[in-house]
Amino acid sequence: MRQIYNQIINMIKNNISNIKDNHIQFSNPDYRPFNFDKNNFTEIKKSESKNKIVFIDGGSSEIIKSSNFSLNLIRVYYTIYQNNKRINSKKIDFYSFISTKNINNELFYDCEFIGLNNNALPDKNDLLLSSLDETIKQGTVRANISNVSNVIRKFSEIKTAINIIDNLNNSDIIVLDGSLQCTFTKEKKYFEELYMKAEEKNIIVCGLSKTTTLMTDRGNSIANALNKFDIDGKWFYHPVVDIKASNHKAEMAFVKLHEKSKYIFRFEIYKEQKQFINNVLRIISNNCNDPVFMGYPYGLIEADKNARVSNNEKNMLLTLFSTKFGKDWEKIKESLSSIDAHEILDSVG
Image 1 (tube, rainbow, N blue to C red):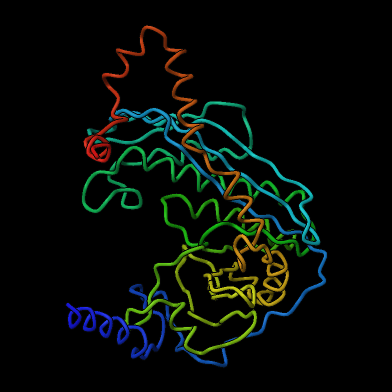
Image 2: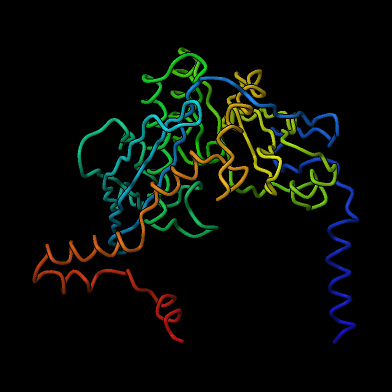
């Protein structure tokens, strides 16, 4: 057995240390990567800027589901920091009811919003999606109706960013959780509106991703490839890639936002604002000193925490609705698929 363990250990070591990474690997020809270069590291220095930073994140939870409908609670949260102190925050909740609709003998998913009218709601006409829409389906099979809530949440996050620009001043910053790449049908429409309004008031738009699936041309992680350069302190690595894709108007970098952090994150800034990347990262790094997650903006930690819909909250809402249905609840439960075979097997211990 010792020989087997040693063989496994050596294989793992060889696949970590003996790889010569050249660049990030992209399958799309609209992404032209630059080779790794030690000269592309830039130190992030301390900033005394008084610009505001807005951190935005969203969450959702499916409360009741059947094969032909899905009721979800959608939540968007934003928090605004200035001089590393929170000066404002807001939580926005609404319900989405997604149902199937037959159009020309094909199944579509339609959406209605329930709750207080607010301008964080996306246009419901943008959410009439084919169940075979490539951006929401799983492999070759028809998209699960539950997937539509992810589209609603993402559109609502961008709408919130659009609306909050009215309360910001020159050179203030918006940080979205995740990439600036459009991944859903009609998402480009919302990003285009955000960019246009941001340019009018000179508001910086960027995104920070906690994780990335990008790999090098040798299949290595970006973090491992960059750590081999053994650069101390806070830094950002740029340029990474020349992006020509019309649905991804961004300049990409990788960042280490605290000198004691072990984490490297993917950072993106609206392409037309790339000249501000150094100053923006200096300001954001001021918000990355919390020991809970050293090197990650506390504003995004706060946004993530407050945007989540906990299982306890979900169960309370389910209990509330079951009470409201009264005697009809037992009949309704027969058509629900809230407990499937996987959940039953998972409960067998």
